Image (cartoon, rainbow, N blue to C red):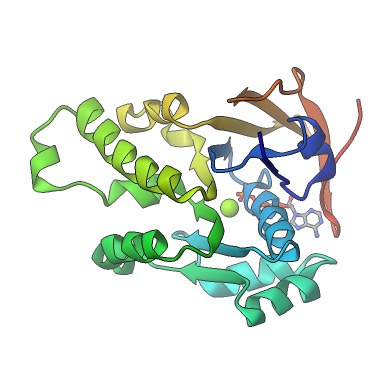
Length: 229
Ligand SMILES: Nc1ncnc2c1ncn2[C@@H]1O[C@H](COP(=O)(O)OP(=O)(O)O)[C@@H](O)[C@H]1O
Ligand SMILES: [Mg+2]
């Protein structure tokens, strides 16, 4: 199995060297836990290998993303890759996205250079994908059908995708399907008892004998650093 490194060393060692190439991974966890920072590492690592990486954000304006990047020691290198077009950042407001998601999908489909894709967040990405036909179907079937369509397109292309999934929706029937359909799940979480203790856990990773326990991590100017227990 070919692997794509996340760029977070100890995360890669938790899954036999990295994400299975061509897989679709869901990155989940509550707000503020470090999901967006995690994917910065993934994009940077891809760009370092000469891959074209695309980051689609449907929640925040570009300014927020730039502010986030500027926090970290790797920001200059990251921004150089953005200038060179190795890392493409696309921020859309929801109404913009609703108008052009099929066009966007088409573009991704046609661009054979893209090797890493990040969707921040999945929740928004798929909530637009309802059509008249699927509205008449039960939610489970129509959402499974939509996700299936999108996933089969991504799988054909052999690009490695991280889709950020906000957990607050996990009880919704639409999102209930996702853990079954993705190839892997990386969970970030924290205990909040007057102190923040962040932990990473990998409950699912197809084709991988992943690390069985959770590990603590910290966020600093270096980004995400996973620690040994
Ligand atoms: N320079 C930094 N040093 C330490 N922690 C930071 C730094 N920058 C951001 N953080 C932490 O990262 C969190 C935000 O991470 P983010 O990836 O945006 O979360 P998510 O996408 O999961 O909502 C903040 O709550 C803060 O605790
Ligand atoms: Mg985020």
